[in-house]
Image (cartoon, rainbow, N blue to C red; front, side, top):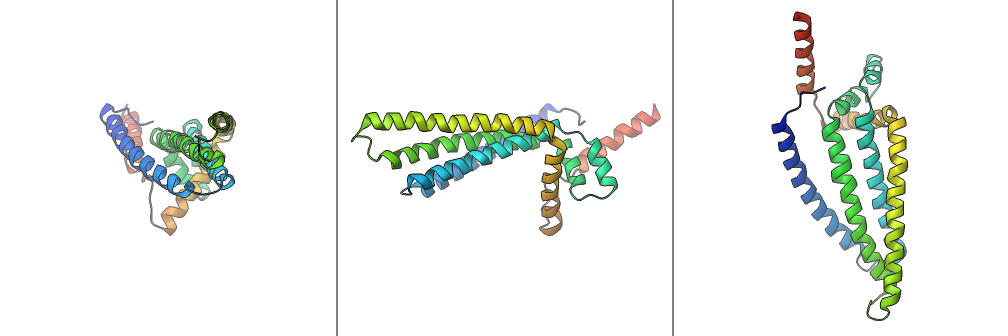
Length: 206
């Protein structure tokens, strides 16, 4: 494991807060623009997609924290694509899970709330015409969205814990594709690798 650093942790927290603010603004504006004037059925489908995105990222974020390096080293020894990337994900599980769970996962929950409010407006029309109907529809829709979000994340957490290795391998294969086809490297692993090597040398001298 990496040595804990308060300075690195604070720096990462500041960066992730700024990234979350930017992403939240962009996605909120995008969701509002897409849902303005669309039918309630299409709006509900959009909300469902946002919820599923949040559940998926919450699941792989937890899987990175639950997974261990050992099976990925075994897979990397027989040159399975994505295994080396899986090792990097596990070694950087704190940052990976923070991005997936806190940035994408929680932000999806906020945006789905905004989107659901727009869907309710499109569904019942002008609230002044029938405020009672508006209230009933708002409560029911909010309950459905909350139930789908919480229930989906509960199921996703169970899957993440029991199938963490398989999930991270799939994500590792996506990272492998990004690295070898597009030249995009998510985690280079240089810092972790060097630290791991230094610890091994220190143990050897002892």
